Image 1 (cartoon, rainbow, N blue to C red):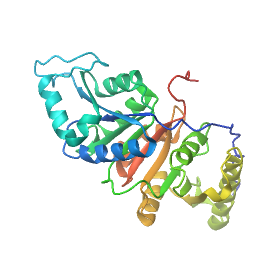
Image 2: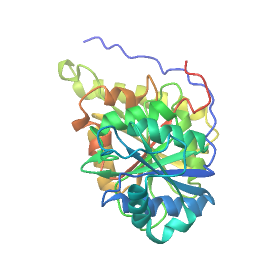
Image 3: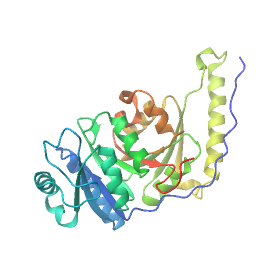
Image 4: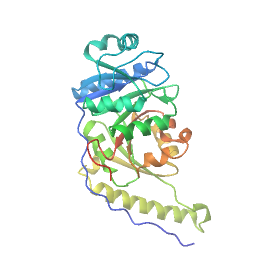
Length: 303
């Protein structure tokens, strides 16, 4: 049969996001938020960054209590005391902000007003920030703030050691890769691309067809890497057939990966995944911490 294979897309040079000088810890006061707190404190030490905590009282949850407007620093007494109690010994070094409103809007506004370079959150009840659907919360928060978002699942035992950057080689895809390399300069990096040859089951010679498709993916990968300043020995390139979620999940489990990095944007891999079922998305299934890096950083106009 005749195969239609696209030529590698042209990609433009990119720059990594700056290492954050301020970190925003978004917490729902749930029992697993200590994981996000521990990771936030570790990263604050690693980057010598300032850390502050944010809690949103969503409409209908305030029980008559009024809070400050986003950006204020005088939280309702009961919520403030509970938040400070959960922070424990870290509270002396952390500013606390509480405001009423939609979670993603409160966190985004405070994070931007305090010039945070990264928002860090945990997972409670299998949902980011303990609110609604996992995909909806992440998509809204990344879109609102256009700031990197770190979703912490695992307990913090050490600095991130094994990092995988998932890519589709689309415009802006170099930003997550370069950001990972800049933020974690001593950690081994893997660039992973999952490809799913269309109509493979209809091919006369399926093996030859899949080999041809992989060759195109390899050519596209080399063209992509040529636009970055990273030395080739700085990372491992992995090209695997299958869906992104299944390939990435299998790789994380087989290699004991600490962190997955993925880009966000209107045409990004994350956007397409979130457009489908969140139950099968990378955010719901990948069993490790996930760093979402916007392809259009805060302060830059959307295309």
